[in-house]
Amino acid sequence: MKRKKTIRHLLATALILLLCQSPLWSGNPRRGVNGNFLDIHLEGGSTWWLGSSSSEGGSAAKPRPLTGGGLYFNFSPHFRAGANYDYSSHRQEWLGSGLSALPGGGNGGTVYREEKTLLHGVSLTGEFNLLPGTGIVALYAGAGAGCLLSYGNKYAIDVRDEINSGGTGNTVSVSGHNADMRKVSLFIPANLSLEFALRPHLWLTLRGEYRFVAGKEAPVPHNGARAALGLRVSL
Image (cartoon, rainbow, N blue to C red; front, side, top):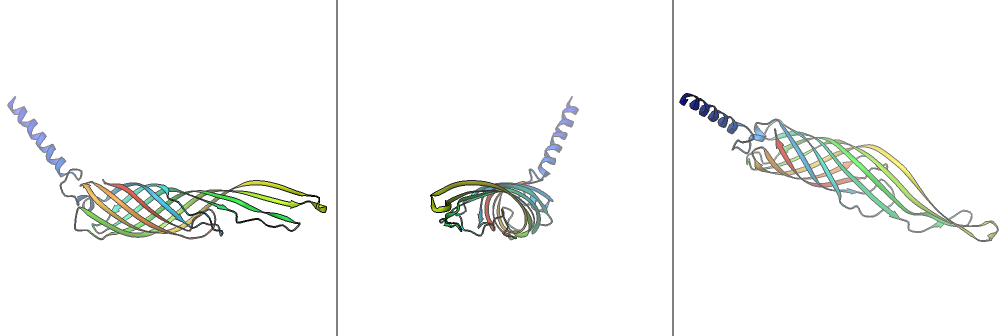
């Protein structure tokens, strides 16, 4: 009986020692950077899309919700590569400045227009850790290349006040129309990520990014700025 208890105690001790050596329980907060090749990150925040694909000015861009995530591949404590995905939206509206004269007499024009766009972003980044020796705080700066898939809808209201032939009166008409838009654009992301070790395998991230979007065709915004709070888990 005593021999069986001794064996059980040895097995339990060996199991505890193995768990203590695991990256999930190690007391070295840098083990996730030095010892783990793969990380998963999830984040949420706000995005500001600046400008519009339209040549006309519109309402100021407002913050929109942002969600995203991806993978980090750690090649050293100083460098990692990221594969990222995010989802956001963009909405902008215009109010007409006035009606213009029609060739046959009277006035007409677009008095209201609205654009709604859903945006899916996929990017690859290379990021350098500017604080590789602290173990508690990391500061990554990076850049890369990405693809932005934009799906949008454009709605407009037109008003026409036409003079009838012979000058017998006016005819006022109001019409509206929808148009679907779809576009794939390239962009260059530049980001900065401040990260704090909560546990050896768990990091809190505060990330800022600016995107330079190529092309000015609808429904793609010109450029975008974003800020997000997230978690990074080392596997």
